[in-house]
Length: 161
Image (cartoon, rainbow, N blue to C red):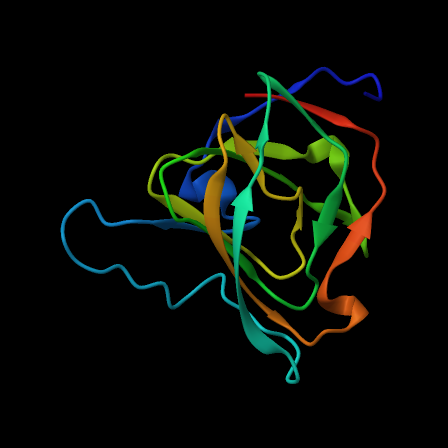
């Protein structure tokens, strides 16, 4: 665990998540909420929109170990839960070009009705679902090449949820 105590996950808020992207929230009254400014980005002309559906397998326990971090340098990536669920989001700023700063990693617990868009280039852990399998839609841009996603080695990071 690299001598660091477990990172405590906190509620996902627009302000706290702003350095990493945009929080998407379902309106509390009937109607529509549009997201024009902010997160959605495609930085490669040849990349095409991609929608994936995933059933996330749950991680067990109240302490989750994150062992992988990734980013999509040229595309935003949106996660939209398709059913009420508990899930964990772990992000890290960049410390030097192309490297995550895991010493400043932050963990969030989205509330029901919240999705998010990671800004292009944001380092993040893979989708982590808590308690029970949960369906998600994932939206991003891809061209099928090696730059669609990048993984960085990391020491395991403990997250308290």
